[in-house]
Length: 310
Image 1 (tube, helix red, strand yellow):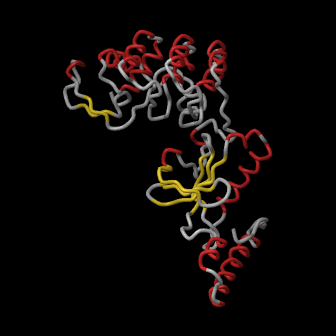
Image 2 (spheres, rainbow, N blue to C red):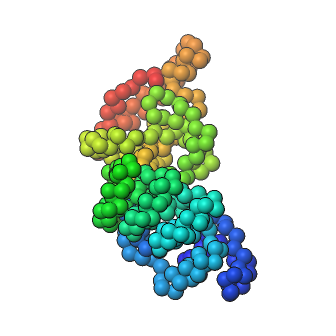
Image 3 (tube, helix red, strand yellow):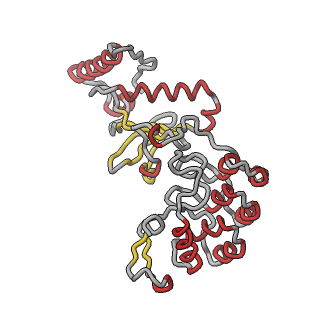
């Protein structure tokens, strides 16, 4: 039962199903059928549920005692048009997501359920919805070569996602990888020109630099992004902003660094006015120490090409 009800608390005996009291603790995971085309191969492309578990899930879904997310995705997997219509008519959100960010439209696209895809789109499903790995329904349909679904999704404005640093196995995921759901942008504020914003990560304030999908259509920019990450991992110095991690396995890609609450030097000078000589010397020495660390970095020196107060 663990693989199916891992996100639920059973407070009654497990039989009969109709007597179960199931209390949702967190979003569940839909594990039937074909999985995300961009997930590491530990979860794709084969089914990860046994025959007995499949039957248990089917019975639970039929009895209406599972999370609405899972029930809707199960009906999409089975091609149950009437069941889907009944759920949506009763107020179920067509874009319900499981713990991996997958929707019923993802499931239908994977399974090649053209009629289900048509229904979900007609009921307002988000055509370019991304799961935790950055995969869209179109990407899934292309991966599993479901041509009719591909044409239908493209007709409704679907566009393929860009994930240029995607890896094939869990072992290849970078150690610095941060899951995008760990970043809280609810109180986000812009902290500099460009794409730097303040966010929250694991209870601390951080600075995040976001890269839009349009950037990754350029292979040179992708390589520059990859090189920047390789460089940032190696840098450890009190006078250089600390790299904390990055989002590379889904879009948008993000670099997460230490947050400096007093802003950049230009803002500080504009706010405080001229510095006292001792403070100016202190700041100059700290900048020089940081630059010297970069220039003396082994085995290759790092050249900062944009040193200025902002």
